[in-house]
Every structure is written in C-alpha cells, then in structure tokens.
Length: 203
Image (tube, rainbow, N blue to C red; front, side):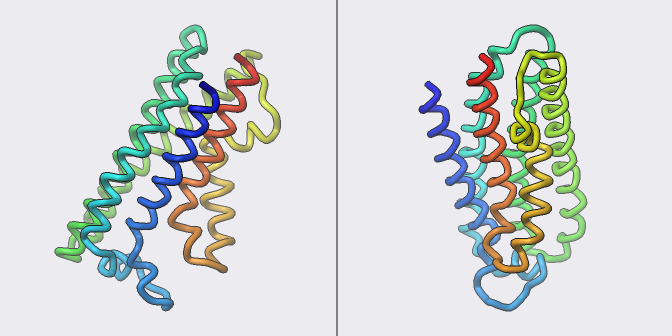
C-alpha cells in the first residue's frame, strides 16, 4: 500500500506540474519579461481549460494521504484528517478558479483587478487550511503522538511552501522562468512525501 500511495502522489504531482505549466504557458512565447496580464493574454484558451480540468482532478488524488491520517486516534486525529482534506480541497478549487479567471480576463482585461481581489480570498483559504493542518501536526509531535525529524518539521506544508515556493522560488526565478509556475506543486510534493515518511515511521 505504501508503494501505491507514493506512486499516486508522484504521478498526480507530475500531472499537476503539467497543469501549472499550461496555466502560464503564455510566459514562454517570448524571452522578454512580461507582466501578469501579458502572460494571461498570451496563454491559449484551450490550455486554460485543459489546465483547469487536469489540475483539479490530479490534485484530488493527494487525498490518498488520508489513508495514513485517518489512522490517528482521538479528536485531534479527526481534526487533523479534516483540515488536511479541507487544505487539498481548497487547493483544487483555487487552481480551477485561477484558470477560469484567466479565461475571463482574456475576453475582457478590465476584469483583471476585480478578479485578482476575488482570487485573494481563495489564496487565504489555502493559507488558513495549510496553517491549521501544520499546527495540528506540530501538536501531535509535541504531545508525543508523532516523532518528527528536523527535516520532517521543515517540510510540513506551511513551512515547505515558504522554503520552496517563496525563498527558493525567488532565487531560481533569477535564473529560469520554468521554476516559479511549478514551485508551489514541488513544495507540496516534498511535503507529502515527508508526511508519508512520518506516518510510516509512527504507525
């Protein structure tokens, strides 16, 4: 079962990376630096639709981690599983919302600022659920239910996002345009593989 879940996580993450690249494929039509609006305008309609469908479906396969989390006992175990499911659900919804928001902006760029504000609410949902799940994992580590290594701590979802998507992402963005669009998914892939490692070692 462990091998199957690891395979599911890796394959679905690679699929999500493809969806991420399709979502911002307008970035690669020219070597010149573009604004976010120009990237959207240069991204093909079909790429946005494919990205929305591919991303939202593949992201839901990350729910397979619940196989381990649902083995945690007690109230805190229940809420840990619940917040993880909410976290993954918010990411899947966010990906679809971004894709269709871009679709709308391509038709009328005047909606760019308005849709940006709407998307910020979905970003907040992802952040809140990420912090909630990470916090519950820390509580489980503190009360002795789970034993975590330093690497496990650093790769919990919220911390992994900061380290890989934002810190490493800002560094790599100076050298390549390919890393930024996929940095979020890469941070989650690292985090999920670490979560599997934690659960295998503790259950």
